[in-house]
Amino acid sequence: MRPEKIGNEYYLVCTRCKFKIKATARDLKAYRLSMKIEHSEKEKTIVITEEDRMRGLPITREVTCPRCGYHEAYYWFIQTRAADEPPTRFYKCRRCGHVWREYE
View (cartoon, rainbow, N blue to C red):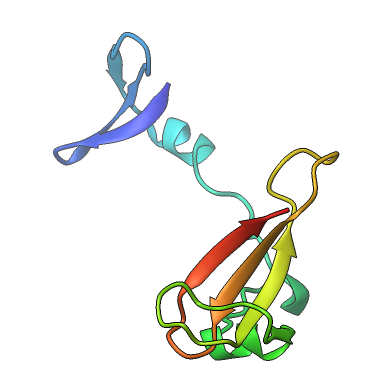
């Protein structure tokens, strides 16, 4: 059963059959959060901008953007299929930002 506030009263409600009984102070204390989770600096979320993400990627001049025809693109590999299959190469046009993929 889980606590649920109905009006100004708290009830313990069964999640299956919706049976409810009025909760006592002791019941509510049992459901109270008893510990606070602290995160280290290493675990905190880092926001990376699009510019930051593209900064470290290699550039190729051997492809042509299908949208604008520009001949420079960032590229990266991701294993999108089974491990015994070759990875998928992704490209991002340096001029218009269009992203496309190439299967090998």
